Length: 195
Image 1 (cartoon, one colour):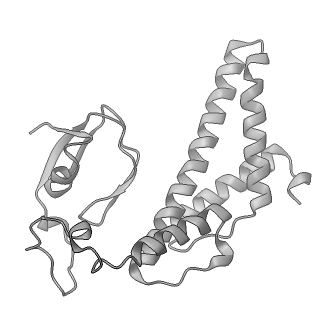
Image 2 (image 1 turned 180 degrees about the vertical axis):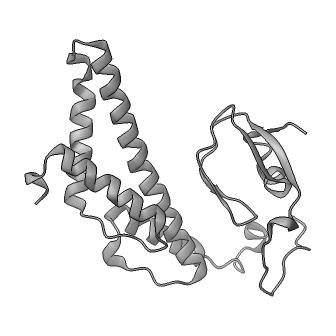
């Protein structure tokens, strides 16, 4: 199956998978053999870069490898996010579409969620002000948030803001506008206020 596929066909498979994964709420079915073959190909080519004589060729191959690694990492991040969201929302997860490491993630998160906080209440209950916690559904509207202009003082990993928006691709030096409530949550880590 994947052994008969050329590196170009494997890359096309990866890019198609990436597009489907980021545009769908459902976990996509992944051919593990194809992904394994692609990752092996990427690593073989990465190890062969120094053998290339032309600096331009080296640079192009390195950039292609970096791009393919980014796509793979983004697929895993999006899939992990979908798994966590499904667990938190009580949605059914199709186990057939999970890879082995994703099944391990699912198992670990399920065990963390099932921890009984009544056994040691001090370990699980924080001293935070919980006045904003409500029992009814909350509707999030952009006009409900005060926005702030920020400078990313470091690369920021993908996160879901308290406004329900998924923030990705924020790098050191980027200027972003996000709700103040997200800044208050992340200011100790990655952002510097420009206001």
